[in-house]
Length: 246
Image (cartoon, rainbow, N blue to C red; front, top):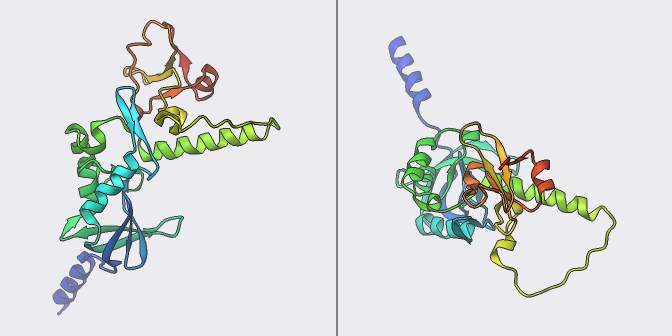
């Protein structure tokens, strides 16, 4: 009897929690679904923001956030999900791992290069992302900044705008037609800002190059590695970068 009781307890502890939410998926964006009236933030993945633009010095700017949402809808909109809630985030959303027809939704999105492993909240999809990166799938086939870095850049830009607005200076806005795509981007992604912020492979130093310097034309910017553009040397120095010696 004791052996049977211990076996029952072991099986109970080993059984997954199946409290849901379960139901039909409505895709909000690449990592957020509506399921059975509940807003679900998928566990341990991070997809581009809907308004996020991607691109770097070697690839054109494109609306990667919209693209990811559209591809995610192609894969999962209207399908039935079974989820296991793991947490509630600061916005009140249910954080959950979800599956469709037995397949882990987060793993599918990361494996196809539609989202990144959000290692801050779990290493569940670390290998899936590395496989997508090595094979150049989805977002990994072009220049892209991680969603977390993009949000950080937006916050920095908002703080900068707030400081400018508090100076008492009057700004006159002149409309000259629709902006170029690159002007939709924060400075960190905007190649119209001519100063290149590069991170050295050997020491990890943050070095910026200005037009006319010896290695300027050879320097390539990769936002996925934390590299970026600056619009002024003062901006680069304030961000902790030093000027290249050559």
